Amino acid sequence: MTTVAVIGSHSVLFQPIVKALRQASNVKFPIRAVTRKIGASDVSDDKVKYYEATTDDDKTYDPILTGTDVVINLLPPSVEESKYNSILNSIERIGVKNFKFYIPSQFGVDLSEFPFPSLARTKQQHSEKARKLGLKTVDVFTSYFVNKGGFLDTILAHLGYQGDNKVIIRGDPDEPFNVSHVDDIGLSLASLINNVDPASVPDTLRIYSDRVSQKEFYDAYEKRHNVKLERSYESKEEALRKANEKLNSGEPFNPADFLYYLNVGVSQSPEGGFAFKGDGRDIVNPGEKYFKWRKFANFYD
Image (tube, rainbow, N blue to C red):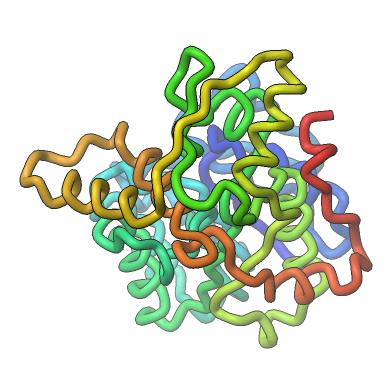
């Protein structure tokens, strides 16, 4: 049996992951759900128990992570780097050999292909630090993930949406990129923990639910919302040039611009980190043995 801790209860991935773990036969309950402050909606039961811990004091993680086999970290890299690495300080004190593996908050773009490495440095260095400690670390890349009422539903700036039914399609409109439904991400992690020998798990897993082009995405968006979009176009070369000029302008980086840089990454498909081959799909769900990958057409049902 495997004891699992999931850190970051306010992440959009938290509920899909915990939902899938609840059904896993080899997971020891309760799952340890870690949050900065337990709120009214954070209700413990026989399968999930909520704990409070904070990156301001990494020792608060020690009693929670002691006895844990797998740690899933969903915290965003928006906190300062020393705090972002605080979980590793706790794991090191407990002893890295006591953990089967660690899944850091790498969900999204394949960082090895992303055309703006400076924007991904904190995440990359975090995984490097974990591995230097001798901790088995598994980076899970999912490309864009979709949650109804959230990313790639009402939040669309990272796919060129400008508001007022206007969109800039950067790159080839017909070039497909990967998308992952949040439920499939949860099922994939649960399967990884439940069904895969930890010794055989690679350092990187690339998974996705389906592939869709920008044209297909926005055609479906128009039908779903009964609107007509005003589409303008920008070549992948022009998009990359403008983004590099903006990034290297010397002006302070505005975190609100991150979605724009992700959009430019998509424009570079099949390069750019969003159209990778899903080699991890055959590891967590060979031949759809454990679940059916969702199709884009059914993402919003």
